[in-house]
Length: 75
Length: 330
Image (tube, rainbow over the protein chains, first blue to last red):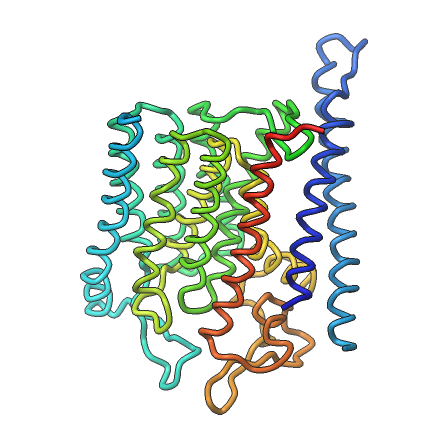
């Protein structure tokens, strides 16, 4: 059970850090010089950034999961 | 203050007692018509009435209509319509075996009233860091949120009382978070979810007299997701739901694709001679939350349920801390 609590806590920390990255980097991001396409390009870039962040976070979670539960099995 | 207290009391009483009093006759009705399924985790494999989603949706609609009579808010309409569509999708799946695409796609449709009624704010708030404006991306969040919360609650509906008991913890956490954020009207609007779950838990807890079925689980999950969006507590709602999210995450990470439970051949859990639950060594079976809890040794169904509730309370505390951190900016 301890491993599951640690995993939960790690997920919570990742949410907090992810929120920080989104607010500090993704939020202020804007594109200009493309006229009416500015908001489409800007939204597209933000979407790609957000999806990339989700993929990176899933990868980190998989690593944490393997580390926590492998330790548990070995013990 | 009176304008908040009276709607809160009336809607809460109606939510709780609608489910409390309609569930016993519903159990009798379902048993008479042979609408029952086997409880695989009990000796003698008893037949249990299903779906209990009918009394759950009755409690939600009755209480939210009362709240709408007090406050004509689009947020309440969005909750009623989205939750009702989710119930219909679940009920169809309870009656007929539908393809794996049916529930996610149906729940995307269920999310559309939130958009059409404009019952959302496209600012996404994070603890410690403040808000971010993402008008286009937020539409994607709405469309994804309802299928995710609906299916996540459905995926933990594996043992007696777990889905309803977990929902009691998560939804009251959300109500407390809304009070902390001083969004009192939304806190009251969210109360019926916890109360219908609590009333249903009386009949769903071990040994179950009724199962919620897909209609019940999707109804609870969709209402939870809608409250998260219209109450602007998306991140807090995600934190409170983490144990159920972990279950889906472990399942997907081990199966490496989206599959319906009935398509899985390997069994993650089996029974000991005294009918305790025990994790299997089956390599083809998915890794689930229950399987991990059982990794140290066999436990009774009730013991596993309480371990899941402990995780729910822990993530509920993290969610409340997140709500407090919303008021702090770095």
